Length: 198
Image 1 (cartoon, rainbow, N blue to C red):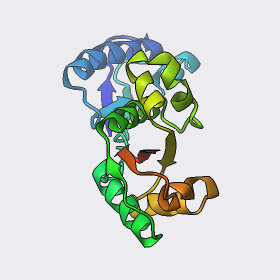
Image 2: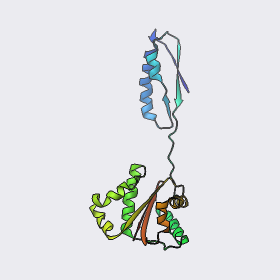
Image 3: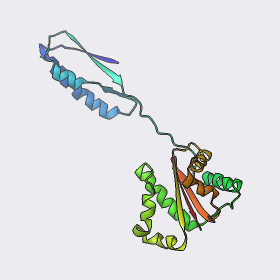
Image 4: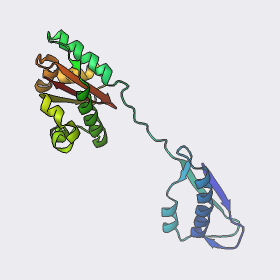
């Protein structure tokens, strides 16, 4: 898109035209702005680099380009219940018992998932190791059970998440470890946290 100005007064500098345009445009821009509108590209650079004088009757063309629309992040639509179902199904296929849910383990899974979502990446179980020291309200859970944490990130669906766990020796224990009787899984935005216990 281009905006054309004609200069009606006497001789003025290009910088003055640009400055006047910016003031007028800014007022309208603030009123009608949204992400799909337009923005001025490089006008300030143009103003600084130009000492040209514009004579009466000369036309000034200012180019405006559309602002790119923001790219929305898309996250997988699956969550904890779907992942829980696939994990227990795979455990049965490995010949071990499906785990039963314990609400106190869901508390741990929930806290950990929120930590990972806030961090935006996996933390190598660092937050899990610190929970008994940092959270007195959950310390008793660590004293009552032997807990293990299994993390996953970037899986497209619950089956993909289970495949990622199955293909690493330490994580495969979630699927084949007969000692685990109880557990809970929370998942959101591509992150999954499984807490298993005995």
